[in-house]
Image (cartoon, rainbow, N blue to C red):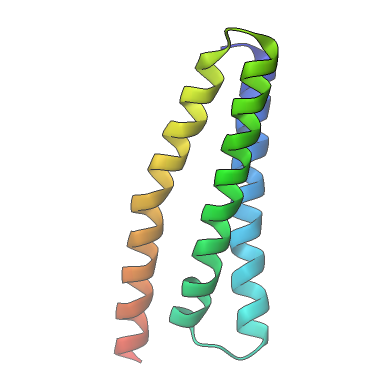
Length: 98
């Protein structure tokens, strides 16, 4: 993995997490429950991740045979699905206990 690819991955993860945190913060500021906040911010994070993955595909295609970067981004996106599901389940149980 080249330093440029590693930098791209770190920046992409930071952008996705920032979108998710911003979505939670704004929806909490609007007075929504934690469960509602997660249900709003998780699709935003998935959409952002998908856009970044499509951008990585375009970059990989423009540079020639750079499929490693694409595979890493797809792997990160696949890892986000169980993490987001676990966060939604945790939010449900946290809200249920209150």
